[in-house]
Each structure stands twice: as C-alpha cells, then as structure tokens.
Length: 300
View (tube, one colour):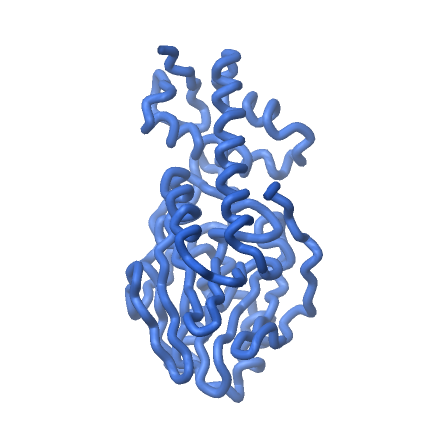
C-alpha cells in the first residue's frame, strides 16, 4: 500500500460531535502546519466520561470545552504526550472536575535542537496524577482503556485503546494526514520505528489520531508508514554516498519543492535518521551529532 494521505477531514470548531457509539470529538481552533485543522479532543462514554488530549491552553477553547462537558461527569483525563497542543488544558479540566490525570510522565526537555523548534513545543508543567506504563488498563464506568507505550515522536508518547470497540487513539504516533515529526533528542527514530512495528502486532480496526480524521484500514497504513521511513533512510544514505554530508544540503536534495517554513522540520527528520544510522555504525561524524555537523558514509 503506498503512503497516501487523506486531508479531507473537516469539522466545526469547538463543537462536540458523535463519531461512534461511545466516542465524541471536539476540534480546537488551533490549526497550524503541525496540527492540521487543530487538536481533536476525544470524549469516551456518556454521563461518566474520559477525555483524551484536552488540548491547548487557549481561553476560547477552554470555555468551549467547559460548556461541552457541563452535563458530564469527567472521571479520567488521558494525555498521549506532552506537546502544548495536547496536554495544557488538562490542568484546567482537572480543576473544574476533580478528575484524575493519566500519562507516561512529564516532558523531557529540550524539545528543540540548536534553538530550532519545529513542533508546538513541550508542556513542561504537566505531571500526571497516575503514571501509566505499557500494558496498564484504565477502567471507568462503562469502558476499559489499554495503554500502549509508543515512544518515538516523544519519549513519553502513549496510545490508548478502547478495548471493546478495537479503536486505538494514536495521538501523533500515526496520523492520516501527514507523517509524524521525530525531533531529537526527545524524539528517537529507532524507537519510533519499533513503536510502529508494535502496532502491527495488534488487531485494532480503526485509529483516531488527535489531528485529522480516522484511519479505517490501519495495518496497511502503518506498513506504508514504515516503508516511507526506510525510503527516506535510503535517500539519506544515497546523499552520503555522493559526498553530501551536511543536513541543509540533504534537505534540499531530498525534499524538492518543500515550502521554506517546513524545512526546519525536514532537517530534524533527517537528523533523527542520521542518529539512528550513527548508532548502527553505518555512518560517522567528526564532531558531536548536531544540525551543523558533517556526516559521512562508513565504506566497507
């Protein structure tokens, strides 16, 4: 299956909509090159509910979220990872409702390299009430949610599975509209690929990423995600084989026609692959790995 993105998703902002028997979503008004149309806040259950990725700390969004949940009893607040488009609203939601927050742990700084920030940035204030680990089960009134640790996009990324419906909430790990950004040092390309392979062992029927629409045939899509990353690695190795060892030059050769605003993200993706290749002994560099370093292929 070729990697084909679906960017047709659309929904009214700050309105709670039903997308499944026990799943509702509210789209925050925070569109960007990294959030697509915005953060999709997920509500599981009716009456007594769990909320996944409450979203950004924005007054209009917080007001809409509070209004949408006024007739619900929020018992659980789940965070997939600590980027500022996902977790900051958890603090406010906890204050309003007294609900317990769940996540793999606090953010591990920094979220940038050489001063270049290409994501929404880290939420360093979020510390979960309950630290979840891979395989944990979160039980609420009428639902059971499995925790799947999926490091790579960030070290503390977790996917959550609604067990009875075989629905996986994938955060930023797998998205239908774009690939995920992997930003060293917290993001790790080796971990990311391992986490993708981990999903191939599961039998989820539908993925709901935090950004964009659902992925309804997930296994072939994840396989295509992995193949895309391996193709990117092959392109990087080809650049090194041709003597192109600087990241900016690799970006220009590999990402032909890419908008200038997205080049920092592409540079970090290349850097993530280079760190993986360094660990594997396939390449070398004369200095500590960084965006400014020169890399070379280890010829046998």
